[in-house]
Image 1 (spheres, one colour):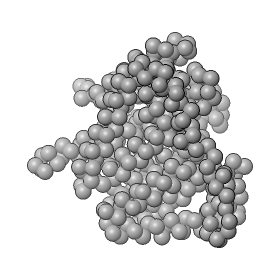
Image 2 (tube, one colour):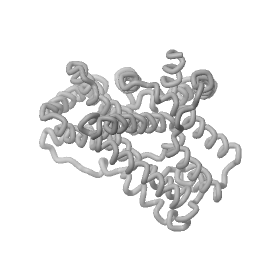
Image 3 (tube, one colour):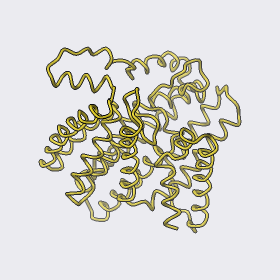
Length: 369
């Protein structure tokens, strides 16, 4: 049964279904996708003799989101029904699975996912200059790295922690995700509150920079963001025009008028994902997605859910500091990504963090703190 648990978690967390489609075609990807849901249902019905408390937060948020977003939905019914059913299977059955995943198991899965970015950079160099490994999108790969990096602060073994910090940081910087870089700096500043010794992590950052130079000279990173960074380090004049391209703030601004057109019931499922609208891009913001597609009520509940987890994780910061760091990463990442409901490793990681926060709170309550 443990093997079944790890197989399901591996397929979802390592994004094997989407990676299978990209690398081997729809047949392999489709098999991996069907296998993940089939094994998840099998695990649920075999392992669970009595279902424990379900995840009412995400079940309610999902119900309201799909209910309200169906009002103005313009796509096919089959697509909408399949998307909603898959979400509820993930939340209802998957929540029982994440309760049985340990912190170390999660870390090793994310570490493997992070390593795939380095393999991508070293053996499959791209003219694009950004690398994503199994996650196909550099920003999503950056999220996996920063989530893994946050978990490292919960690891007790000092040597494993330092080595992991270097490797995962390097993999994250290879994505050249601005979100990853900002969060990496922020987390390390917060980590000084955990221990003043964590200030040495910035020395690791310097080592990473020189490692990137070596990689650049070996395989040619061909990334304008890195070239700008090298120029700054050499006191050369730099242009910020390339760095400011594809600004998330500019992307969000394209959707503001659309939100105001239908603030109560939303504009319909897919309109802020580039699926059922004239726009070819999504909102790149989960909060805007929920508000724009399903209206104010689901948006208010979703914001409350994230704020609730942030506050509760802060309360257990002294005992489990990595949980607050995980919530910082998740809440800020959702500002730059709109795939919370259909990229299931994001949903899984959210549920795992939520469960661990609840568990830590229960321990504090028993201790009378």
